[in-house]
Length: 128
Picture (tube, rainbow, N blue to C red):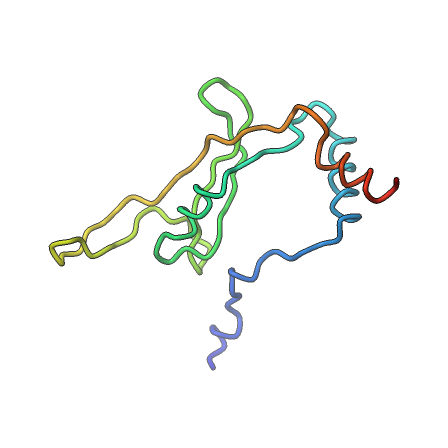
């Protein structure tokens, strides 16, 4: 194995499960420090599956952004094993020729600003 191979990190492994207590505390700390910010975003499984299904995609990068109406949102894109955003990829079409396709750039999240928040549900389950 070369030095470069040893230094290369597998980006598929980024992220880990944490406890409910730690997650709740992290969310609470952020919301206390930023009381007027969006509390949460919701993204459906279908678009996440589509982004991850692109050839060479090992993860998703989320960017803070503003939508056309000026509201805070997220833009998310697939990322390859080198940490580069997927811009395009090559597929073999029905005629057997190579074809370049644009990679998915996604948005259209929903903010969860109504009802009991995830934090409140976790908090109640831990401390009730």
